[in-house]
Image 1 (cartoon, rainbow, N blue to C red):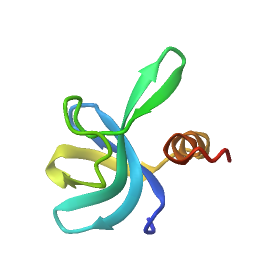
Image 2 (cartoon, rainbow, N blue to C red):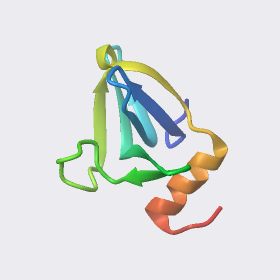
Image 3 (cartoon, helix red, strand yellow):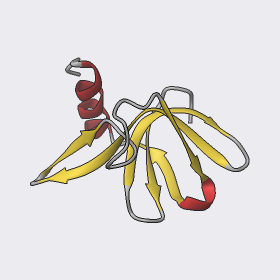
Image 4 (tube, one colour):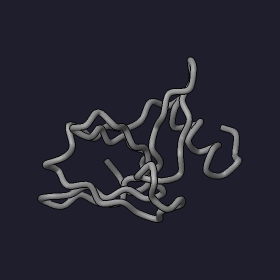
Length: 91
């Protein structure tokens, strides 16, 4: 993955997060502009936080690899919706 690729982080809890890849260390993954992915009917919504009760608009989030199942590039259609939701730009 390259810096600023839009990625999905799947936590061991099953929660999914989407954001811009920043870096990977031996123990962590860091993403920028992280959002929780939440199903809403037949679509997805992106909540601009990493914790349901956390402050919105966190600039970066660091995930411990021990708590992550996988990190993958986000599907093109979902990445476009994420980009639209954070910037208002329609791709």
